[in-house]
Image 1 (cartoon, rainbow, N blue to C red):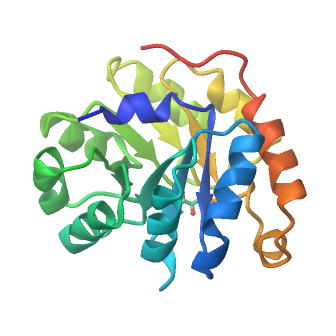
Image 2 (cartoon, rainbow, N blue to C red; image 1 turned 90 degrees about the vertical axis):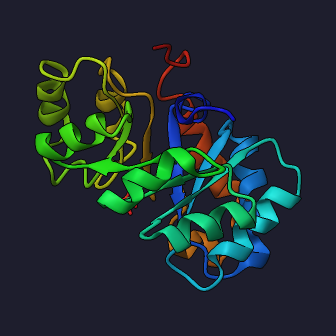
Length: 213
Ligand code: 3PG
């Protein structure tokens, strides 16, 4: 099984998308690929989400699709069954932390504090979503984590924009950053794939080279 870090290093920016209509999912993913993005998080926040993941996975597009907003073990299993390559939570519970290593797909828990990070590290995790990034301390918080937790790596999301993403990507403990700014609801509703491709291209150029470590 691939490791979550391998997926997080595919693109500097991971679109976090909320899809209301699964029939647009494959076209959306293709537009991201044309813009140079290779990984996408589909949030389990709509009835269409699992179907959207299925559509993207089945269409054999050159993009890795993960499920976001995984709140329970049932969500984790549903994500894997739909064809998601990985699963992400906006936080973590002891149950999910224990189940993650046994899941059939890699699992990325989230942290917002040093204590949550200690729990995740003690459970054997090294990679974390940092959510909600901007509200929970943003760049200064990630810099502060680097001292006591030098091995932890992060995918910050929440309140990040094209204007601020580069500062996050410059941090050595950030593998990629995520956000919803690449898929505005009105642009999705209009099926404006040219616009999505342009947003993706800008985001994909936010860091020249993929991150190691
Ligand atoms: C997430 O789940 O990561 C967030 O909803 C993305 O946050 P944003 O909408 O502020 O980019």
